[in-house]
Image (tube, rainbow, N blue to C red; front, side):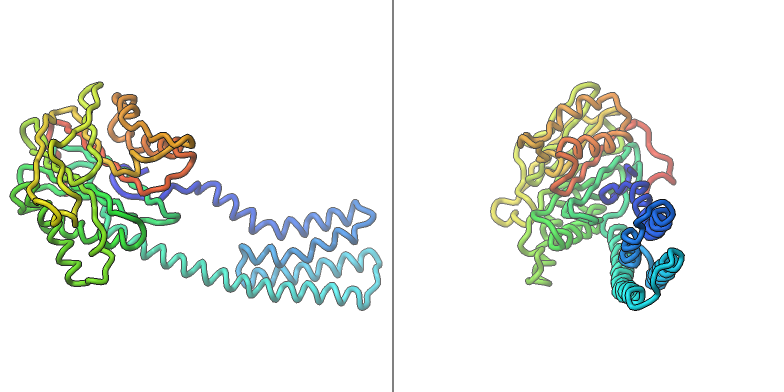
Length: 378
């Protein structure tokens, strides 16, 4: 896993490649089995019927012309075997050859449809990759004196982007980070997340404080909803945690808009960074007083801050017990920061029974105490 950028659910590439090669080889293996059976089996004529499956098997992995070629090879092999055994050359042989020919024609059509769908899927996947790079840009491994290590997994099968979102920017004298979760799933959640990411990127540099930044994120959603009233973004809310990390000193500032509280690790101690007065989630601020409480807490060299979405904390085991994130964070206290996202991902997948039911985003921020070289920050 690349700890500094989003990636889809891991795929066992080696296994997939082996399955693909086996699929292509299967029609050939069937013909080899028939030839061997003809040599060692007295009643080999029954085994010859396996040749009817050759073009059908080829349609699953071979191209159209490859499928036709396999069908023709099966027809030729059956004729050779029948003639080699001195079998009758008549209506029975012609009927079996005609049946293989018919199966080959249908298999070639199936192969053409499959190939077209595979091509369309490849194009859609390429578009999804571009959208991912635009909407959820990979984070730099370091901004100023802070290391950033990200875990991002979309719950939807083969999805690149979900309703969880993140961003980090370096402003004069500090780093500002946003991590959030849009209510619901699907394209509507992605749309809302993209609006909030655009608002953050355009306002994080000049907002005087985190409270003003939260208000501008809310305004960005409101403007988008006014521009497109039929959009899902007008109806969805998002929980967000905003963090400001000054380059100098040993403190951090946090504003929590209805989001799960981050975890602070100092040495072997892990504590929850609670906010005395949490703000309402974005797009709900108009329901109450929009004043925000900014929590300031110690954050010195060697300290680590884990931001995460509820896809992490609300993962359940088969008994319905929530994932013990704070306990796991203590166990990984001595692990290098770069390894924590991978440890968390593997542990979540195992705890949830091999799969994740929700989008997952977690960002580990570690203060190193030394500023990054100029070319290492974005």
